[in-house]
Image 1 (cartoon, rainbow, N blue to C red):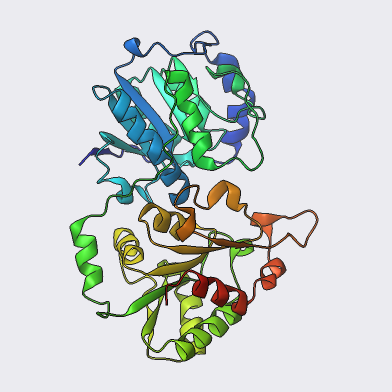
Image 2 (cartoon, rainbow, N blue to C red; image 1 turned 60 degrees about the horizontal axis):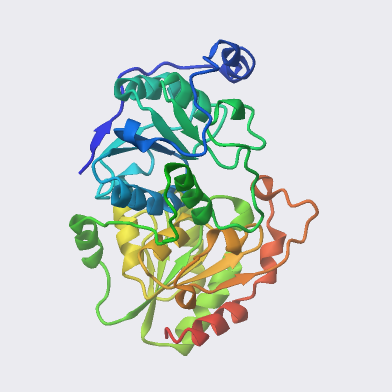
Amino acid sequence: MPEIRQGKSEREFKGAFLSFFRKIIPYFLPKNQVVKTDLVPMEEIDKVVCFSNTAIGDTLFGTPVFRSLKKHFPNKKLIVVMNPKNYKLFENNPYIDEIILYSGKTKHFFKALTELKKINPKLVLALHSNEPQATPLAILSGAKYIIKLPNDKNEFNKWHTNEIVSKIEGEHFIKLRLKFLKWLGIEENDCRMDLFLKDKWIEEVEKVLPKNKKLIGFQIGASTISRRWFNERWIELGKKLLSKYPDINIVLTGAPNEKKLTDEVESGINDKRVLNLAGKFSLGGAAALISKLDLLITPDTGPLHIAIALKTPTIGLFVAGNPKESNACYDLEIHPFIQKPKTCTPCVDKRCKYQECMLQITSDEVLEKIEKMEIV
């Protein structure tokens, strides 16, 4: 298991720090510290630091990079900066040697910097970490080579080792992560995500699941309102499934803060074959629960990516998100999706307060997709 470093200080910062960082700090950073090159001389590198400290799905998208780094450079230490909210999912990853915790928030910036300076990294791959913190964090830690993609709109791109790279619309997020490796002399096409479950997570889930039943998971919640399907549609689908297939159980998955949503769906379906397990397990246990399902129906959110990593069949529900970028890019036969066009121009996505576009997806359409997969 990798060592976990959390740092010692708990300094608080005000929002003005962001403006200060953007306008003042760059003038004092050593402009010649970071080397511009098409190929990092890996013989100089004894450790690789990857920044992947945002959401669960974004960190899962980086796991093919971790695996490839260890395959090609087995003697170099791999250190990953992760979010304190989800790092436990990755403690068992055999390709990671050490984890540093960073929330990505300004108030925790110097706490993370203290830990990074102890390591004194020469190479940082900023796989998925938000600005204005990510690049300055890498620079101030002493990095000589900093790779960040895309960076065409990044205000700190003059400190990036790589040239200006723009986002390609429709490019899968995993394939974007794998592009980072080109600056290390690696051509990698294996997109499979890794998620290694602990035995104790599996055991706690097995205690509550019924035996010899088909388990159809409903992931009700999502990271943003814009990606949620409406509860009344989940209720319609649940009633139709249970009426037509008496030997299945519906499992409601989700985090503790999604319990209000799952309670409403459970009450609406009103059937003893509905197992409301949202918030019942640790984060690792929630992943283990997904691994035991025969199918997970889910919007574009973290549990979708967990299921894909664990080879659990899924049906993804998309409007605001782009399945070409975030649904499975492998095992496509067990990860179909339903996509509808955006109904608002422009789509405000994360700022949406009422996801009317998701009403285009009907319960009959999802039921038909389930039956085509021959799950039930």
